[in-house]
Length: 450
Image (cartoon, rainbow, N blue to C red; front, side, top):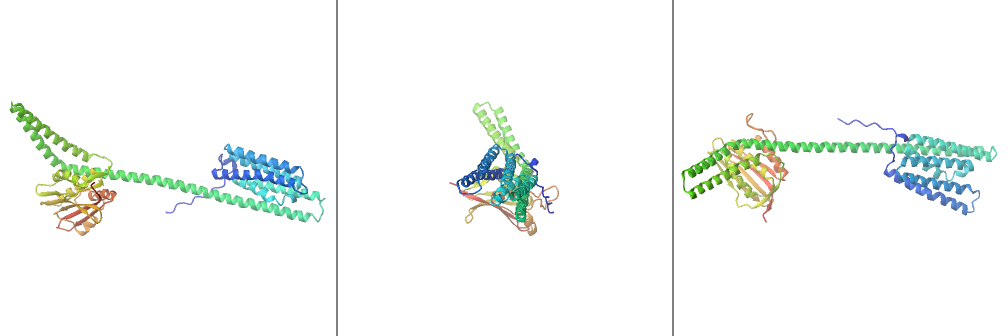
């Protein structure tokens, strides 16, 4: 659905303008006033030194006033009063032009009229539509007064009237045309600036929204990973309980031996056995707690073979007695950049899936191999289970896709595993046929051990 078009905003009046006109506008006005402050005194000096006719004492007076006006506006603007400085410039220039046209008339000002009119109308246009309108009317009135001075100086002779009227019409029309062009140009620029600022605000808002969505997505993935951990912890519970029962049996046996023995070396040996069994039990419980804890991923450089060999006892707890579990690192020595807890989660999830695919027994092999051409480590998990059809294999990495009965699977195991592997710049490949088992291969960038 297309977004609604933002209506054009009318040009604000001077009363609605902020204290400043903007950094670029202020810089432009400073340059303008500096140029005018130097130009008018130079022109007055040149006229007074040259052989021009009709130059009197009013020229340096007006040039000095122009200089004072420009310097004063520059000082006021430097103090942060940009709007006040611009208004003072327009008003002061109009007053000086009124004096000049009233003193010399219209004809004497025609040659330098462009230099006189354009700066006034430009600054008035920056102030707003109303100041520009009043400045244009004032200029037209000043020109009419100057034409009246010309006619009065020629005693209103009939042959001079058409010439003065044509000259007055051209000057008034030119001033009005310049004001009209400046008004529409400044209005268009301001509206374009407003639209650009609005689009920038929209982009910033969408950027913030996208960042929130990304953070929410990361939180959701962490929650899914934790849910998978807890699901696998439940499956590990029976095997870990068996280990704990065995360790508790050892502890009870050592305690009974210590009670029956009166020999201090035998008692010390029994206590050492109790301590060893308790340490093993603590290691098992700590490993289970670390695995089930909800934490953000912490990738690090791992020795792949050592990390997988350390997981072998936990993987064997997943399978029943009728399933053989073999872990073969193949003398592979390399490092991978991966989070240890996430690697355990992925391999444990693969082991759980393999166990469920072999209800009548079978074998599960976990192998490591280096792929020479890609500089990658291949982790292959093979089972001799029921396998998957081609349709199921093509969709097995999709989130929430599962062939298990309701309540026995979420369809997130392989999907989350693929997401974690992809985040580490790796990939997962699944090969399977119905009745011929499944092979899941994980490829990760590998670094040689130094």
